[in-house]
Each structure stands twice: as C-alpha cells, then as structure tokens.
Length: 583
Ligand SMILES: O=C(O)CCC(=O)C(=O)O
Image (cartoon, rainbow, N blue to C red; front, side, top):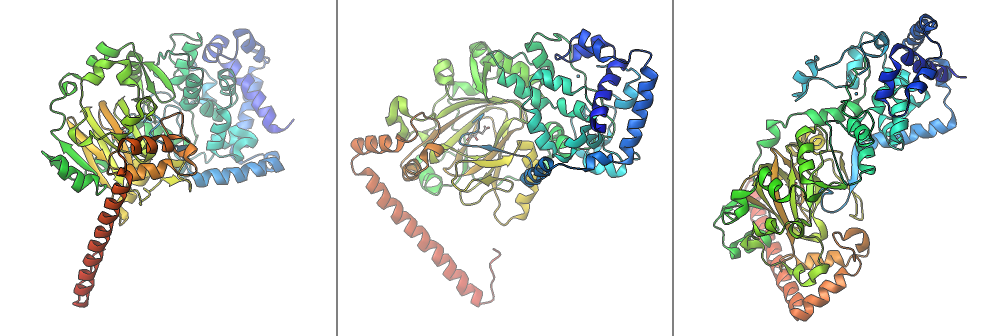
C-alpha cells in the first residue's frame, strides 16, 4: 500500500473518531450512522495512536511530497499534458446562439488538524478585493498567499495525493462525474477533498441534473440537494474553514460571486442617445449603418412600464414555469432563489414562450415603432424564437455573444438597470474566442470574471467598445452581428425581441444559407431548411424584392467606400502639410 492510500484511509478513520458518528452521517448522505461507526475501527483506545499518526503525516506532508508520489506513472504524465492544455484555456465555457439564459462538525479536537476557524472574521480579503462577503467560506486563499504562509505547505497538494498533478479545473471536471453520495464520501478523505467536494457548482449541477420540476433553494446547493433527496432536511450546511488551502482557480470562482460591481466598470458611456427620432432617421442613421443607439421615450405608452415589478409578475404569473438556464421553474420559486443566491452565474429567467404562457404580459407592451418591420413573421409558427422575458437579480446577465441568425434586436428595460459593453462584428472582444466556423464561442465562465480580468483591456486597445447603462424606460438597439455582454446592476425585468427588416434581410439570408447552418441556426427545429422556407415565402409575397434590396445595398456600400476614400484623400493631403491623424 502506498503512503497515499494509507493516509487516505487513516484520515477517514481519524475524522470518524473525532466527530460524533451521527453528525458525520447527517452531513453526508452517503454514509449511515452504523457505517460511520464501522469506520471508527480504532475506537477510543486507538485515538491517541491515531493522533500520533496524524501528527507524523502532517510532518511528512510539510517536509514535501513523499518519494512514492514523485514516481508519476505514464497515465499521470498524460494527465499533466491535459493539465497544461486546460490551464492555457483558463476558465472558459463554450456556448452558442442567444444566451442560454438568452456545510457543522462540532468544534471537536479533530478540528485542530482540519479546521482553523469558521465564520467571516477575515476582513483582509474584503479590503483587498472590495467584497460583499469577508473571506472564503472554506478558507480557500489565492495561490500567491502561499508565499506569505509560515507553513509553506499547500494542503491542496498534500491532501490530493497522486491527483495533485492534475489542475484544479480537471479535478472539478472529474468530480463532476460523481453522484451526491460519492461526492459526500470524498469530502471525508482529506482537507483537500473536503474543499473540492464542497464546490457548490458541483452540487448545483447535481440538483439541476436531477431536477424534477420544483426548486426549493436553501441558500446553498448542497443543502438544496440534500433537502431535495429528503436527506438532512432543514439543516443548513455550515462550511468549515480549512487552513493552508491555496488555489487560484477555486478562489476566483468565489471571488467572482462576491466581488462588488466596481464603479470603474460603469463610468464609460459613449452610446448615441436619441429621443423623438423619426423612423426614417433611425433607419438611415442607425439600422443601415449597423450602429447601436439608446432610444428614450419609446415605452411611454406601455402599461408594463407603470405596472411591472416583482409583485405584479408574481400576481399574474407566480405559479407559471419560466425557463432559467437548463431548467423551468415557478416564478415564485425563482424569486426565492434570487433572494438567497450568492453565486458566480446566477440562474437567469430568459423565456421565449412568456407571451403564450401569460397573454397578459404580452398585452402590457408594444413593439416600438422602429422595429415593426418583422419579416420572420411570414414564417408563422415556424419562425425561430424571437421574443424573451428577461428577469434576474443584480449581477445576473448575459455573457459575450452575438444574437442568433444574424438578426438585430432591441432590449427594453422595464425595471432595474443594465450595463452594456458592445463590439462591432469585425472586432472580437478581449477574452472571447469564437471557433473558426462561428458555431461556438469560448468566454470566461462568468460575467464578473470577464469584467475582472478583461474589462481593463478594453481601455488599452485602439478599438473601443460602445458602452452604456440602460435604465428603466430606455431601449438599446443591438445591430446584427454585434458582440455584447450585459450585467444587471439591480434586480431587473426586461423584454427583448429579435427581428429581420429590409436593412438586415440579406445578412440573415446569407447566414441561413451557410453550409454549416445546422450548427449555426438557432431557435427553431428545422435549421437546415429555414433558408429555403424564408426565401421562397418572401419572394412569393414580395417578388423581386431581394434583388432590389441587393442593388440598393450595393449602391449604398459603394457610396460609403467612396466617402471613406475621400476622407483618406483629405487626410493624405493634410499629411503632406505636416498633419498626422491620431489613429
Ligand atoms: O438583458 C440581457 O441580459 C441581455 C439580453 C441579450 O443579450 C439579448 O437580448 O441579446
């Protein structure tokens, strides 16, 4: 038996001896009280011996990795390569189309090995990062803090045994394959596994994967899981702070969930704002130029603007199921969740069938005059999803994406406020990596992570994004192909619709006809035939119209190019006179 195995088995016994069996059983759905008792093989007599062994193990761990652990088998070398790849990928996730949203053990003696303190006493991190909550619930610290540690040892490594060669991301991926029972058992193995097995995102996935139509969120996903499996009902999992655990990966996920929205993320505001704009001017100056604009005074007639708030929605739709991420849940359950949630990527209501489910909501708003040319309407029932009710707490939102099917969109804030950052189609935002075929995009895991790690870069690049805060009663026009990220600054309710007009129909047709349309087209079952259906219906209703639009667009683009050349000529002329452009 290798030292690692001995250590693992020993820790299990040690913890079992030092914490009353019923508490361990309560904490872990995987073990019964009798099983825990069985694990206490050393009994009370063996307790001292076990403690001596524990102290020796700790000493060995501090002295460095045991020799056995340094002999890494071939399979683990492979793992290291995977780890390198994973690290170069950073914390990213892949997605397509509209945002897919479009633990207490008693203060027993065993705690002297595993637990330093509990609660939120550590204000250091708060000062350093501007946090809503003091320090990490499980005591995780950023790796850099290891340099300041007097112990000089990272229990992350000593407690993982041979698995320490894997990156934290890969370990979390592997643990993602465990069920609740195994995850809870694993938490008993060592301090390191205690921390890893309590990553709330693992329990969140378990809850969402076994979701049966009702969510009773308990403030943390592990407790929610236990409660939903009729285990440990009513008891909140209270985390134990582990000493000397350092991990940037795990720390960052917590940081992103707790970091305050920083004022410097909000101050830039360079979008054009318009009020009382005529439809002709909107088309000429914004739609045809494919340029964003913030429109004011276009929702004044909406009953929604006066009536909608959380109470109104609950009154009319409290028992209605809405889409939020991978699940559909009652609005009343969603708001209970939203009140308790402190996570990196809160579930976000993004529902394309709200109007059919609650006709009253559809009756409460009108499409603003600028966006009434809605050519996908001719597809009737076969049109791709096009309107969404959006609702979520502060910090929820949509990470960087381009809207589906090359459509343009409008987004109207009924309650709350949203920060927008937008890049034109030809500029890929920092921290965003689209696949060559455009079907997938890798972005940071969360919106806060993007702001924390990449927003600063927007200030260094020559191509500045368009930014704004869109408030109640305001509408943002999102032209086709524009990248955008949106974060709710307060609890928000919004309506968004995507549309095809004569200004973007050519782009939509080109998009739908791409060879990989089955991977690109979204919001409809029949992705491959959408091009044919749309084009033939449009041609039969408006014969010759596509050709006419083509000619007009080509003429407009030629004029645009000529204008650019003449600006360049002027610039070149003035440069001969010693003038230099600042770009
Ligand atoms: O309100 C939001 O979260 C933004 C939604 C969005 O990105 C969109 O409508 O395309």
